[in-house]
Amino acid sequence: MPAPPARWIFGSAADPVNGRIVIFGGRGPDAPVRGRDESGDLGDTWMWDGKVWKQLNTEGPSPRLNAAMAFDGQNILLFGGRYETPDGFLDLNDTWILKEYSRKRVQ
Image 1 (tube, rainbow, N blue to C red):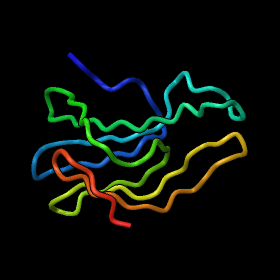
Image 2: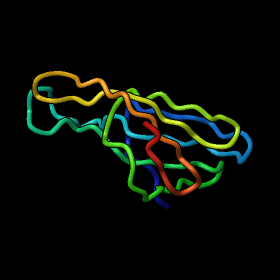
Image 3: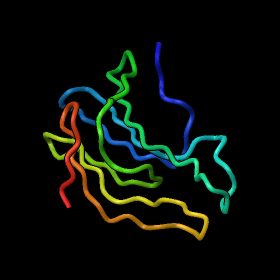
Image 4: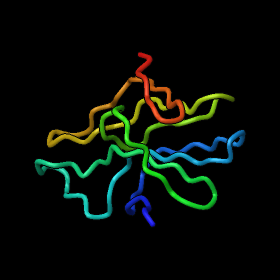
């Protein structure tokens, strides 16, 4: 049974209308130390329906940590976060809407 890989500093939001929890991004436990070429930031989206995990295979936000996520009564929203570069952190200022199986950039 598929499940998201271990991670920390990820975004998450609950959708109580449909009984789901959605997580996005974060950092894997084996992420390299800052200053190396690859940051280890994740850009995948997973949904938990109370029984099984399902990876949502859609194009969308770039990999990031600390993204803010919320449910607005109809959709899951994702805002901002940070991406680590060899020179430090880059603060992101974009907004995305997760509609069932697609993501749309708002800003």
